[in-house]
Image 1 (cartoon, rainbow, N blue to C red):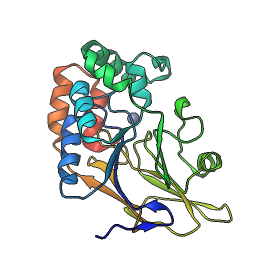
Image 2: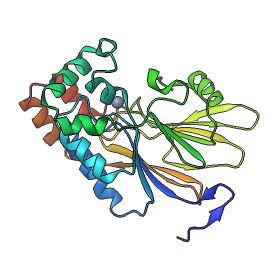
Image 3: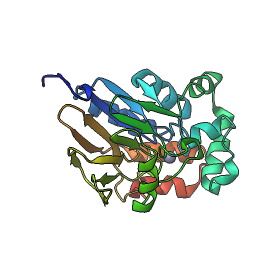
Length: 253
Ligand code: ZN
């Protein structure tokens, strides 16, 4: 592929992943899939920790692989900043256990995570562009409309809900919501795109989810890769993590 400069600025291919949630097996599988791809930047949209068995390893690997890392609510909670009383009991139990095994180096790395990242044409954030550190969810067209008002770019990539979805806003303001594997970006439209979750998908499919964005071709692809979730489940069992969190990995729920 030839990279050129268009009116957007520099053409780029960007790999985007989110919500690794201490699932090293899933993260490694995604990075293996990306070995066959060409990309100029790799952006993590947050929640490298929480829920899973290997937070230190995932934080280290994301730090090595990613060019930009954004803060998620679980990352923030591990540093003791976001109040875990807002978390459900399973999430709370997992983050409490993780804070007992987190290394100083892991905390140091997480403390460098950014609230959001901007490229010339796109905005990257964990929950949404409106008040990002309140960890908003964009689950429907009503939510999306509020966030489009706060979005200065044509495209916003998010995670947080663990379900990939596309909100497509036409010039007249009308918004469509859809689940797509391949999104051809149209002139004059604006987009909020959830890339899904690497380490704990919740759309009924166990496979890890990530995205590739090509600003020259104006295409976003949502990719899925199978990984050995039984290995992650075994490690969670060994560490007495909640059964509900262990089971959900195999159903993607
Ligand atoms: Zn998450």
